[in-house]
Length: 208
Ligand SMILES: [Ca+2]
Image (cartoon, rainbow, N blue to C red; front, side, top):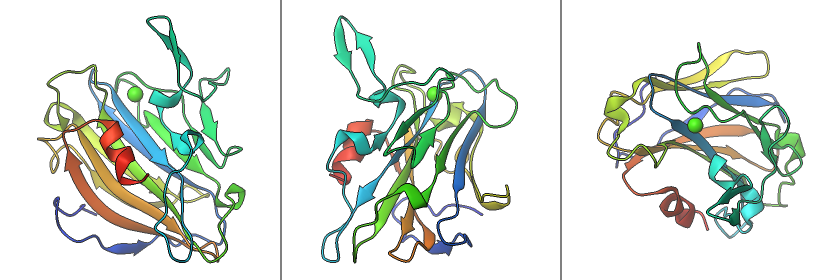
């Protein structure tokens, strides 16, 4: 499938997942540019839009504990295998890939909806964002070959595939859309496909 152009209204696409079925979001690309896959776990009530209220809900390589100029930043611990997770492994992120030279999948996020505490009467929204790492100054998706996002179900069946290189060439990031999980555990992908040239904090502000 193709994502809509920025500004077009997003369609809802059923992911055909069983209740509480684990699914995986994969990001792959080729070349030397560093892309990052990010996800937020947003919780809403019956009357309020899902939001991030705690930094522990931010699954991002920018939120991994590290030292920058003597300052400790980030709250997530990196496991021995390089993976990191939020909310008791409801969302797990692969080891960070700093270029696209791996064969196939470079970064992935695995979501286990059963581990999310769904608010009574409310939804969970998991916005998905792919971005050129900010250290690649001046680089946009146009300079990244074969950037693709794929969502797979627990048996590895492909539910969604979107190409980023062609449609979002002038942007440094794309908010692809959100996986919405309702009270019953049913999951849908709502595509928004908004390209942006700001930083990740601007995205975060939309959901906090
Ligand atoms: Ca990366």
